[in-house]
Image (cartoon, rainbow, N blue to C red):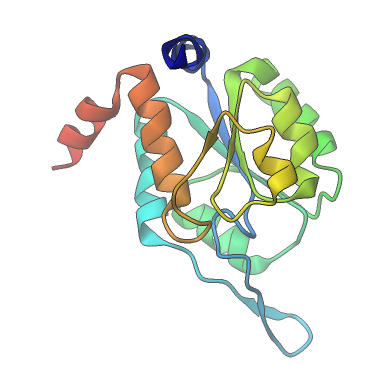
Length: 178
C-alpha cells in the first residue's frame, strides 16, 4: 500500500507553487554563535544552497519564515535570491497567511520544511510537510517525509530532490546543472 501514499504526495507535488523554509535547525544545524550583544554567526550548507537553486529552477518560489531575527539570514537569503524573508515571527502562521495572500496561492500548494514545535502549525496547513532528521518527534509525526540528513547538513537539498522526484523533474533539473 506504500504506493497509495506516494500517489497522494505526487498529486500534491504537481500543484506545488512554493517551498517555505525554517532556518535554525533546517537551513543550519541549529547552533547559534553570538559575538557580543548583536552579532551572530550561523553555518549554512552549500549543497542546501544548490538545492534551493534547483527548487527555483523548477519554478517553485522559495520563502523563509523564522522566529529569530538575524542579519546573517538576510544576507544568506539575498545570496540565494530568496525575496520573501519573514524574520522574528514566533507565530509563524501570521507570516504564512501574509505570504499566501501576497502570492495568491493556497496552503495546499506549499511544501514546508521544519524541525521544532513552532513549525507544527504550518505543517498542519501545508500540502506537503517535511521534517529534517534532527526534528523533534512531535514534528516528525506531521511530516509526509523525514530527511535522512540533519538540518544544516544537506536536509534542504534532500527534501528538494524528493519533491522534484515526485514532480518528475529531478533528472532534467540535475542534467541541466551538469
